[in-house]
Length: 359
Image 1 (cartoon, rainbow, N blue to C red):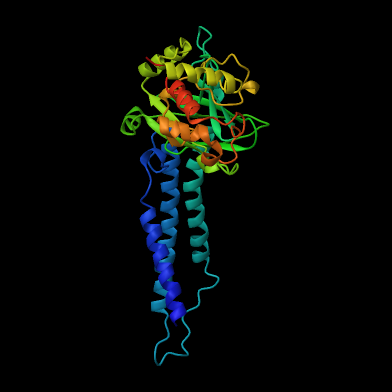
Image 2 (tube, one colour):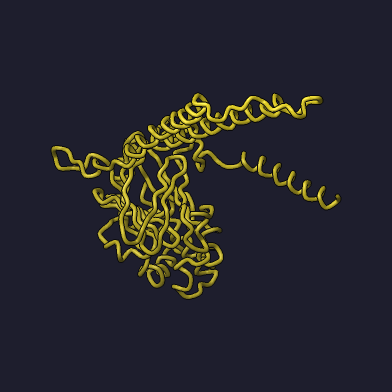
């Protein structure tokens, strides 16, 4: 008896914990707070399917309770057999037609939305001047970071994806190593990035929703890809068209920033000796994709996070540089450069925190 009560206590604790934790989270990382057309359609389908399932459960529960009460055994009627209804054509038609109707209610919008969201025929559509009508971003997933190339704009970024609001943005996603999955919960998506093939889709961001979220959404890898899968994050900056155009102009006209302090100058020398073979500091996409083996550090000082997950300050940056394996197990940066002294870390951090594109 005591053992039985102990199990029920554990079950009640688990149930309460699940209820409390279900309210945790942030709107910029929740699929239940859609901020774009794709996510809103997916959210509406979720509500529709839950509504239909709830209706079915409620009706079945009512029938079940009714049958228990109406046909329960009563004193003096132990041998009474209720009227048998097997073979009733009316009942057969009812419980055949109703499920078909419910399936159609769910299937028709699901199929329509699936084909609508899967339609990428306009990805190469061009205007009379030969320019692509919609923004195209090539997404390349790596262990454990993200690269974003704007082929028509000549720009490459890492970890921070910048897109305009209230416009269709098309994506071509691929992996540089193993299978990953691109997903921005409030915007939709969740499409696999494969090393052998390229997938395509589109997203939009509502300007008012973006403003409510501070113009930043969090993206995730949704495919288990290794020990740091849970840390393979990226940020989406959704900017009004004018601000996006300003960002593009800044990236296209970016020049290599000159260190402003003696410490940063020392850091530049350390960077050129140990880091430049893998990391670029220019946002230009002139380097072939196959040669881009590490995140592009152009505009590093303006990013939302360090390594996708750490707070953006010099202390966290030095923590990452000193022992990247401790922050992201299995990353390809571990062991690629000699151990740095505290003085070297100070200098390198000072240099990296001056890598700005926007003035």
